[in-house]
Amino acid sequence: MLRVEKLEAALPAITPWRVAAGRSVDWAALEAALGTALPSDFRSLAEAYPVLVVDDFLMVSSPTPGAEALWGSARREDEILQDLYEMGDTEGYVPFPQPGGLISWAESNSGDAFYWRTGPADPDAWPVVVRGDNGDWSEFPVGAVEFLAGVYGRTIDVPGMPRDFPSDDPKVLGLSDRID
View 1: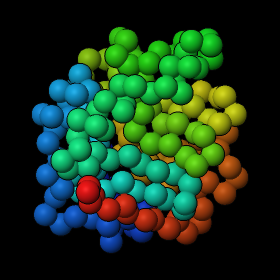
View 2 (view 1 turned 120 degrees about the vertical axis):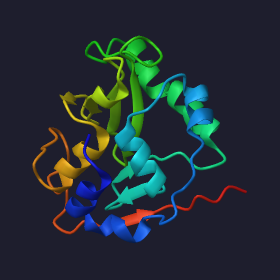
View 3 (view 1 turned 180 degrees about the vertical axis):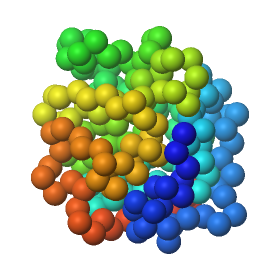
View 4 (view 1 turned 45 degrees about the vertical axis):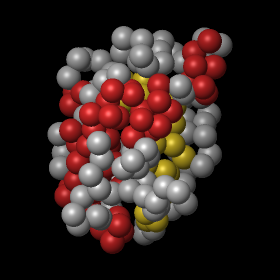
């Protein structure tokens, strides 16, 4: 698993949003709501950073401390993926909690979705799957952090993305953890 620092090197604009003391996500509550553990690289990213929006295009979801069960249940109830599956438009991918099912961890503002394929049993071995807004599916044999570092370090090319993705100078916005 790639460390968060490698992502920070590839995408330095995220570093102002790092929470120095950590975010204190209740992983037990989240994983109870979701029904599975999550990859350790994502856990490290979620402890260090809130929800991140890169270039007003890609939103990397992160559980909010105090609302972990909500984040977990939202991942289990992915209506768009379920609809695509029922229409036979998932190229053999299935929604979680089916064995090997997909769990969403990021999305774009143009309808692209970024998932983990939850097989094999070890979450640290889950590959990233991308469903482009054009209906193309791509799988990458890396975790979320390595995927993002590869995209922004320009060593991973994602078919079907806009020509300017990633941009030459990505801007990052971190969203607040406040829950009222």
